[in-house]
Length: 539
Image (cartoon, helix red, strand yellow):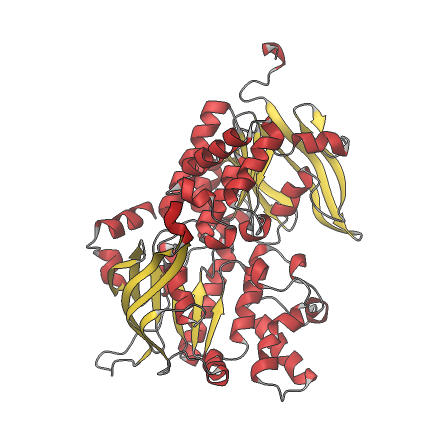
């Protein structure tokens, strides 16, 4: 290519002018204006429902049934008006995207290595062998251990953080000019977050790649972005250099975002009070998976992968046990065993009972133990209305309720999580999960878990998809419910701020083993293990 025709660093690569997005005549993005220069990192920030993701998807015309207007000039071409065939050539090659929901974006019937290799084959026309090698190299670049083995795995066999890194590897496969990253580190623990940011920064430096980062993580924005664009209700309310906006936010909405931090308001046992009886206790809890063996041995027997090695812990009544560790450390596996959703060895008692083969006995226990999964989009049925989803548990555990009684309880649960008021509740009940933002879907998942008044709530990354203001609201709600109802929480998270705000006790896990445990002040304030110290420094 002629050097005079190559965009120079700092020149506009993407220039969006007057972008408007409407659905069925209702406008949700109102005249968006911003630009991304060659080699620049721009962050699009705002609460869930502010229009961040819709705006980014609209640039590639990936929003179904949306009416678009305005201009999005990329490298001299208007993305909103060029022919579909030309836009398909740009997607993945010149403009790549990391989607927010890795579990739904990845094909469950293909290994992750084959999915990455497919992108390389379609865009670079390499041989199958070279495509497979490129897939393994890309996985290695994103920090996945044993990349050759992971390349043979299917999405459901990977942790949430590992699936997110697969998405990043696919997006970076063709070294795009512009990367649209929609919450690329949401499911990653704090140490891997830094690795991914360093990786993106390195690729940008070496290849001149520009990045448009869509996120609610202000710590990530401060560390990564050159400029920040703040959105509220489909409009840009403030933009400028990151350091300037963070140091001197001018708009009240930006000021509110900067001031949102998790605050500790956890219930504390009174001095001299009786110790709280455990609602969950485990001794020698062990979870294993059968794995294929390579070579001749695999014909006759299968190997064993130990996901959790002999964990011992207790969750006192009315308190929170936080479990932290890197992706793949066994946190979510431990939670699934507690829920009776995975076979395990060792002793495990929940509310004084053990999971058994009697379905009726387990059903009574399941009412006492509910869960909020990490990925709300895949855990909410796309074919059910919000009223049906949130009220589903009532149909199982309270079959005698009338439809009107169920509806009142559903409305109350939605109000508890800040999703409904008296003016719009009827319209809300008839909507479907895809009509909500990622943060709103997470709140729906919490409402569904709370509606049958459980005693124990297993929270698997309950705030990972929430922006800072909503995260603070949800944590305050959970703290309030714990005080008023005596709820116990098993909290799985990689967010140290959430642990500090919510937990009474902490387990630190690494490679399936509990390496440190104790009271939250002791573990976070005076960590004994080097691994714990690394996690805290990274946060």
